[in-house]
Length: 235
Image (cartoon, rainbow, N blue to C red; front, top):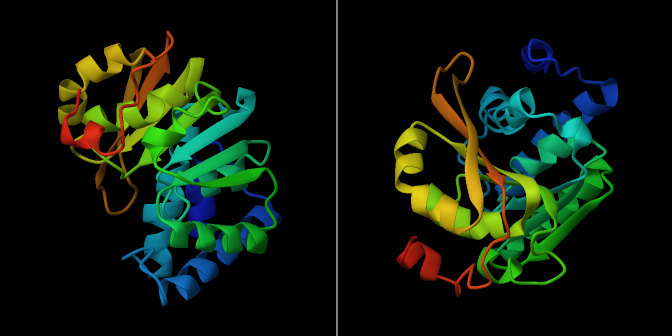
């Protein structure tokens, strides 16, 4: 924990005693639930804190969340990156969308264990969620981590971002390659690449890319297409 806190302090993020306790509770809850369902292959404390918690917070190193009120996390899995971001930026109103019901059962238990408020869980596919009037083009920030290649991910996420909002795609070493093939998708869905941040995770030095795509115009009504089509026939 102290090592984790020091690494975050170097990036301008200080943790309160409550936040430190919440991350510890997150780890214990994740490991307990992982024994009965497959949530993560990484189970050692050091690995979870670095590869899940720290990694999930990296958008906060390059983007000012203080002016952000709503965040939608698509395909959150075990809560990454949205729950670590919610712990560190508690003012965020977080919406999590995941197609697997059992993961949402875990997330509900986690949210209760952490004492978090302002987190909504939705059992849905991104393609259908993005067509729901109450959610379409309504979020300040949309995030996705380890969900799909960028050209597919854009169709899942950009319809949810409001005009003037931001889609943050969290990618590994393949980020540059994926960005090249996603140009048509970004433009078609109303986005433009704002910036790309390249860095390595501390200690293990694995490569990461954060791709910031600003929503500059409304997404055409034809998108997202029906479930399965974006992945089968990417833009």
